[in-house]
Structures are given as C-alpha cells and as structure tokens.
Image 1 (cartoon, rainbow, N blue to C red):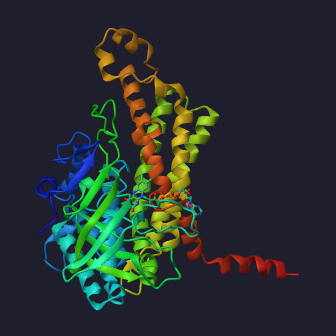
Image 2 (spheres, rainbow, N blue to C red):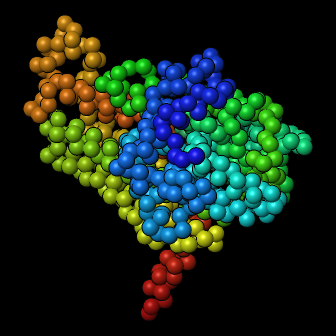
Length: 482
Ligand SMILES: Cc1cc2nc3c(=O)[nH]c(=O)nc-3n(C[C@H](O)[C@H](O)[C@H](O)COP(=O)(O)OP(=O)(O)OC[C@H]3O[C@@H](n4cnc5c(N)ncnc54)[C@H](O)[C@@H]3O)c2cc1C
C-alpha cells in the first residue's frame, strides 16, 4: 500500500474504535470532536503533501519491499544523500506546522526504521523479537500508520533513589504470559498524539533497577490504539473552538497529550520486541542509535520553530516601529543566533554522519544531541524575548467580533500603527500570544523543556557521548608546557 493521503489517514481513525476520554466523556469520533478535529486535519495535511505532484520525490521513496512509494521518514538511510533527503522531508513537515507539532508521525517513523535495521539487537533477547521488529516496521511503513508512544511510568512518589520509582500497581508491568501473548497492567505518560494515532509504541528509555537483570517493567511492544483494555485520558483541549484569527495556532495544531491506562491489555507475541531484559532495554536507544535519529527529527522541528518565532518577532518590531531600538536589536540578534545554531547543528549532524554497525547512515550524535539539549532552555528564552518585545501589545488584542462592533471606529483609528492597520496589528499579536502566552503557547514551552525527558537526563546523555579526554588533554598539554 503506498503512502497515504490525508483522507485515508482520517478514514483509518474513523474505522478504528478506541477508548478516548476528554472532559468526562468518551470521544465517539476524534475526527469530528471539536477539541481534536483540527489537529487531525493538520496531520492529514502532512499526509496530503506526499501526494502533491511537485513534492512526490521529496516526500516519498520507493519501498525496497513492495516497490510502492512510501513516506520518506520511514527510510533506513544507507548514504549521506538519503539522510539529507530525510532531513529535508522532515523539515518540510515541520514548517507546515510552524514547528508546533513535535510529535508528527516522522518522530516514531525514524525510531522504528533504526530499530528494524538493528533487528539483531532485539534478537539478543529472543530470536523471534528481531523478526517481530522487522515485520512490524514493514507493517507500519507499508500502511503508512501514525504512532504515538508512551515511555514514562506514573510514579506515586519519588522517594526511592534513581530516576524512576517503579511500583507494582502503578507502573506498567507484565502480569502474566499466555499462549497468545503478554498481559500488561498499569499506567504510562505522556502519549502526545494519542487520540490522533493508529498505533501506540510502549518502551522506556531505561528502567531504574539497574541492579536487576530481569524486570516485569522492562518492555518494548506496539499495539493498535483500539486494543481492548487500552484507555487514553486527555488533558483539556487547547483548541478553544475559535477562528484562525483569534487563536491561530491552537485552532490548527492541537496535538493533545494523554495519560494511558492499560487494563490487563493483551499484547500478541508478534508485537513484543523486548521482554524483561533490563540491560537490553537500558541500552536500546544508544545501541540502535534511535536516540540520534529522533534528535535528527527534533533538529528539523527546532529549525522550523526558530524560523517561525524569529519571523513573528521581526513582524512585531516592524509593526510597533521599535526594531531600531538597541535592546530590540539585541533580542532579535539572539533569536537569529538560535536559528542559525539549530541549522548548523542539523547540517553538522548530516555532514559528519557515519555508517553505524547496523549499516545505517547515522547522524553525528554530538551536534544532533546538542540541538535537542540547547532547545530545552533556548525555547523558553525565545518566548521570553517575544514577551519583552511585545509588552502591552499582547493585551491590545480585541476579538474578531469587536471589529464589527460599536467600538470598530475607535479600534481602527487608535490601534493602527505607522506600518499596520488595526486589524493587521491585532491579528499578528494574537499569533504572538499563541506562542508566548496562551495555554497552547505555555504547553509548547513545557513540551520543549521536557518532551525528551528531564534536563538532567539529557545532560547525562550528552556527557556520556562527549570526548572529554580530548578537552582535558589540550589543557594538560598547556599546563605541561614549561
Ligand atoms: C508536553 C509534553 C509532551 C510529552 N510527550 C511525551 C510523549 O509523547 N511520550 C512520552 O513518552 N513522554 C512524553 N513526555 C513526557 C516526558 O518524557 C516526561 O515529562 C519527562 O521524561 C520528565 O518526566 P516527568 O514529567 O515524570 O518529570 P519528573 O520526574 O516528575 O521530574 C520533575 C522535575 O524533578 C526533577 N527530578 C525528578 N527526579 C529527579 C531525580 N531523581 N534527581 C534529580 N532531579 C529529579 C526533574 O529533573 C524535573 O525537573 C511529554 C512531556 C511533556 C511536558
């Protein structure tokens, strides 16, 4: 089956019955629900790009398995050229959503491409797990499915030392094995895109009890979002049902985040990729390099987001006429710096890519990880800069109805600036507020701080990769030079 269209993606969601809860009600159809439908449309628009005649070669490639054209983010890159093509494709998707849908399907597609190529890694657990992984990758790539994922266990307390406090009855664990598969029970966070996905991947970056070799919490599997016993609990929607004028980002790009409950869910054996082996689980992201491939996807998103925020900031200062003031220049310069750094990291990750032990062209890990780590603090700062540049203009943002209400003449007269009509000004600052102040915008800041786990974990990951001896040797040489 070739790459899907947006309509095919939407039909897939409609055909699959699943248990999604939002504001106390079970969602009958995510594609028409007012809090979710616009997010579905945004993902559908990404799939539609695959069928734009001008973009077909950019967005798809010929599957070596079926000969059909499938989505390019599923490619297992074997050359630098293929890696760069994948980067360009992901950047096009990220620009389509202004970098505001971090969990677009490419995030999981690159993960499973890396894992399928490293299928032998999973075979170390049990020989059939390697085969399961390769078959599953083929299944999702040939059907162009959308995946959500949930990695983190809910914790009742954080009193136990170590990063995760895993408790039976709360964390997700295997409760029994049957001829058909494993039965799992517990709760996980935070499945972004959950209601908008066809399948859910469940694994962990690592489990806490490093002293154990076998744990019922050590898991890697993927199942349909419609699997019996699987329940998605949504936060409230940040799509408030307003127009694009009033809520330009929230009315388009709500990707939703969910807690996931697993109520004795049966995972068929063919969907199990890792079971019980703590060392194998803890090593998965680094040994298969899936961590670096997701960082490549994140780098594309960061570029799109930086470009967008910079563009908004430039338009704000143009509209307010304060771009020439020294502190505005300094702040704009900082935004330009972040944008260029993200581009440089992406380029370096691709230029210095190397074939790994699985025969995959893997982006260079240090620049890829650097863009991810830097963005945890850079993005909140970018938002702060918007707030500093915009000041009270964020509050001079009447609704669309006010433009045709009794105060319309005053609004037109007093809210205009030298370079913008009142309507242009308000429209722009409503967009800026959706980045810098609204619930949608605040969630974006939280996302960038935490989506790739907490800052300490990311710092440790970078530290583990960094060639520290090289840095120290240079200084030592200087010290030793009498
Ligand atoms: C908007 C958003 C979207 C997300 N999307 C996804 C997704 O799609 N899939 C997914 O699997 N996950 C997702 N995540 C979850 C993300 O992986 C976690 O939020 C992240 O791993 C941090 O875990 P936590 O929230 O439980 O933080 P906590 O563990 O509660 O940490 C809270 C704070 O305490 C600190 N802290 C906690 N324990 C320790 C310790 N032992 N030592 C030192 N400091 C500590 C942390 O550094 C952090 O600052 C998302 C998160 C957000 C905010």
